[in-house]
Length: 594
Image 1 (tube, helix red, strand yellow):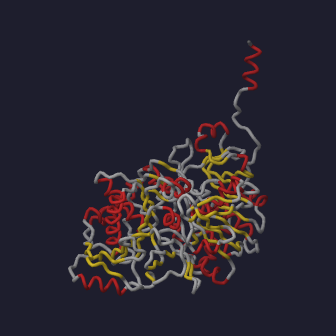
Image 2 (cartoon, rainbow, N blue to C red):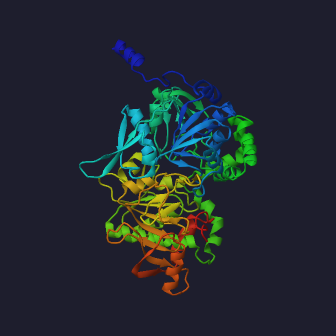
């Protein structure tokens, strides 16, 4: 008996720590793993590996490194890679800055025009599937995304359209994409790199599982393997794929790190919007940007970077990540919100789009709304809130892994971290964009914005080829346009944005059935493929219908078809207006197009 107990205690006990020790400093890890000419994948979870990217910039600044960067989104401080001549190619779905509203970045614009960088443009889902295919060891995976878009034509070497005999629809096959190295920031890891990541997970960890040289992982805290086992349901990257792991607190800043699952002893932190806006502003001037890069990246280590941010700012970001922090943030703004003020053009647009969306959901019995960024997501939020209040059932989703959220006040950004606490599921791009929004049983409607749109509903959010003017790319819009049952587009109406024919098709218009602008509502009636003006918006005055229609025609770039009966949409009701201003109290979206 004693012999058996000794064997049991000696051989069957679970070690507190196990596996090879891969813990090292960030500087040493970058020096050992990153080489010129590499294809580097930056994981696009809710947290970005910014500390790693900054260390790469420090090490290779001014060198002709010839990197290719693969990431779902590229912007903000990463433009230093372009400014310093480190990168030659960017493979992405969104190229620009996203906060407070999506927009092009001047540094990327200049480099693209001068030919110092090349851009390979994809949608969120299609690019993520390329990484998944590589991780699975298969040459390609099918998708409904980017079929019929200009991206399909540009990426002919990595994409091919085929016919689905069962449905008769065209499908796309995306070729696998294998990075040399993947960089990831997580919440915690043990010494061999078993990494806890809290959702939403964006493109997940397939890039890390595919990369030839594995993953360079930074985390908020190095923990024991025993600690990892307690949270094994949150371990998304096994240590076997990790080449180095570094403890780097605030390694995702200025993006945040969620700890909505309350992992013991580790505090999450929210996005630093002020910092992101500062970077975006600096990029407008090369001189100012060079000064910013020197101050925040080149002049010191990550430790010095945090010292410049200061303990008060870091403490604030930790507090902002808490579930109820919005209550403190909104309180001093309530008096201003309560003041009577006429609705802005954007507020009238959002309210009209929400009402139209409710009607679409009721008539078609949809149960899922994919919310884009900006005015579009406010329209989706308001529609979902009112539809549920009336006894309906519909779920809000957002591309990187939000499902069933109830948007909280004080922050209109679609990926607001405090909305995580209200979700019924947190996941990644694949269930959201690949199944819920475009799968065999989907009952979804997409809502997103446009840089340009034509009379057939084709949307351009990528580039004006004639002048080589960059916009931002697809994001998840193409995935919604190609996969959802139908989509509604929102935009400020201007003649050069509502064009006869878009010069670049980011999102094909076949399933884009409705357009809502600051002037009116356009619909495809009776299975027509061209928009008809069916309603006009009014600010509260009572001009003749003929006058409203004429003004709408004057700001439309095509010969507008007008319905026999055109409705006049009144301004939003006070309750709706108040709700919108609670979500966006500083008017980041709602003051646009005043």
